[in-house]
Length: 333
Ligand SMILES: Nc1ncnc2c1ncn2[C@@H]1O[C@H](COP(=O)(O)OP(=O)(O)OP(=O)(O)O)[C@@H](O)[C@H]1O
Image: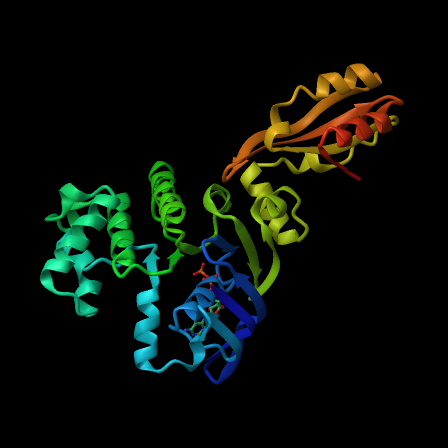
């Protein structure tokens, strides 16, 4: 659906070229919810703007549905933007237009007649739960309602791709959750491809299938969300995970006591709640202390990740049993 091939972007500021994105390869499949996470200035917005042609790559190519975005003329770009909807952190609604008129706007630009526009607007407002707010103005809406209008407007021309630019960053946690549920529902029902950029790991964890981590314009890690966040390899990803888990750095340090081994045990899916630890302790005679841990979900996947201190001679046997039972076990050293 979207493919970056050695795409990169430089900006010239006061005569000096600066790389916002270094050459990047990335493929996003149809129907995926793909998250891009990074700190401020990492290059997230630049990456997103290359997809809808708001920026052209300085080199390499960005293809959307097989079309090279960098080669499009004004007509081509207009057609592209009907296929690629976008929602924004600050909603970007027209303050002087009602909710219905905001949603109607792209339909009018695309030349739909009055009756077809009215039908489509009613359908979209119903979909985002705002059928009874059609005549309200943006100033009369909460942040979550404004973003629902933004979503309805972005979906007006039935795009195949929705770009979300920090779409929940201005919302409180409960409203964020409800907007993310709506996006998740739209993705599942319509098979819409969603690309979202965020600096919040929680947003990625809730709805994304895959994630890419950006740092200083470089893609440092990418893959299925559970793999990247449960077993982060790059220091930047590790920091995002530590912040999300509120991890105390002291717990990550190995216990130097003789005869004690620290391990991190990850259980996913059906094994998450299996009565495993007690059984392994009984069968092997190992004793374990609980150092840290959490039980959570990544999209539809339940998981548990525990740091254990294993005491005694049976540690190796216990690790073996845990692995046989489907747990991933990593030594912490
Ligand atoms: N139009 C521009 N002209 C010059 N430099 C730019 C322009 N847009 C972005 N940059 C620079 O490119 C780099 C990446 O910016 P970008 O906005 O893509 O990052 P970001 O990860 O989206 O950051 P934020 O989360 O703060 O929006 C930054 O150093 C930024 O200053």
